[in-house]
Image (cartoon, rainbow, N blue to C red; front, side, top):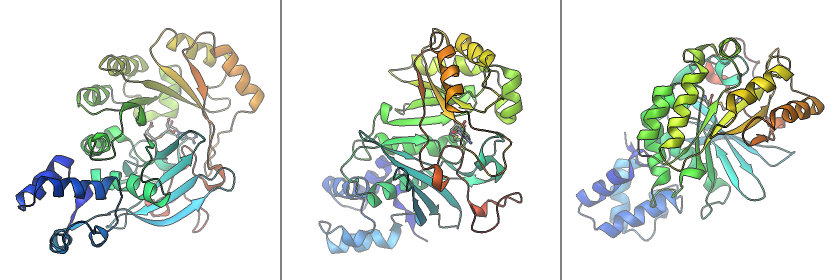
Length: 354
Ligand code: SAH
């Protein structure tokens, strides 16, 4: 079988080209095709000599993630892609266009080993980690498909999976995203979202990659957090915030605390005050996420007036508070709604209703 060329770190790509006896500029041409022009096959790389294109095609393939289906939201144009990997594993990724930016939400694992009670992906179980190339491919394919070759995009690791449980592939992927000859994206354009693992948050801070961090807090105290995110609560909120402060301290990096609003579960006036006390004076932003309904969750979305009240209590205490607008709700593309049929989920919907 051939090697997935986008799975090679950029320095390895360069070494491969030079070892084949080709000059340095050949490497630059190839990198430009792979990550700027987003070529889908070697054949179309017409400024490479024919013999060199054949040479590459004999050893490598370009894309490992092919779109098996694409759905577009009638509400806001959000597009949800179902990607199929070469072994048949499937993950979802989402493209969101805003007036001033485009954000791609990508998956880091096929399924997820965590058990957050409000999240669809968790219900399907875990199948395997994605490779760095499979992560980078989601981005290259989404960009090419939307005609965004020359545009910088924002990347959020908020699709399926827990990025910090797939550290090496995620950091390798981010290196390719950061590289000027890769996607050329800096700290502010890439956000890794995690629900736990203070030691891994520190390792990410020390890894040398440029990215921002989002920590899925979702509860203002450990007892409640343990109820809604059992496996992510092996560490205390204090331990997590400690690691988040470390992350902020290692550079000009941002940390956002995410808080999914589950009506009647973590949305009382008392929860707002506790969240305010917890985050007061901290170097974080706070992002409230209205709950996006899943298949048979017992949870409810918060009505607008209740949300306003929660924010009003929180605002004077907490650092910068924002509310995330859900996108692609009509195609189940919003936060926490990503799920695919082949996850082996016995409680899932019948064929065709996912
Ligand atoms: N495992 C990582 C990344 C994937 S989840 C993490 O936990 O951060 C990305 C974000 O979506 C998290 O903040 C998570 O709490 C949130 N989320 C999960 N299910 C949701 C739902 N049903 N409605 C709204 N947000 C949800």
